[in-house]
Image (cartoon, rainbow, N blue to C red; front, side):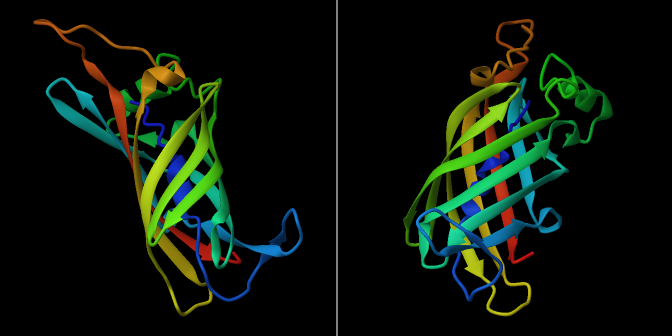
Length: 203
């Protein structure tokens, strides 16, 4: 169930406009605005099929930054780190299973990471391409989302976005499953990931 959620997607946030604030140097000169993802007002959730229904969960400990030129969102980038052991499906026994070597192997791989490689922008729509590393495997993912707006006031100034994607857990070596009576398997392979992100500027 590892919804690797990716988190990653977080990336989408990427990009915002606004007045100058904390800035970081970038290649080619100039500076880019740094936005810090606010986990207290953001969420990484996932959903996977279990028998005839679905189980959902989230990660509760994670952090990330977005670096973006105001007015040049397509040049933005994002980096996110998620603590694997923070997975929460509101069932202690199931969460322990997910932290075990059958799934995330949190003891050996304590974090999941997402690093964007490119961003495409069309109006409020965003497509974030990046590398998701989970359980020692790095594979590309694409997150599709939309900007929800930029707060005019502040400080701190805030930006919001929503993004979603679907991944196959087998691609990251998370293969545990069990056959069920009558045919089929206990768990599905596809994981739906949903991200709601709020980031602050200069924090």
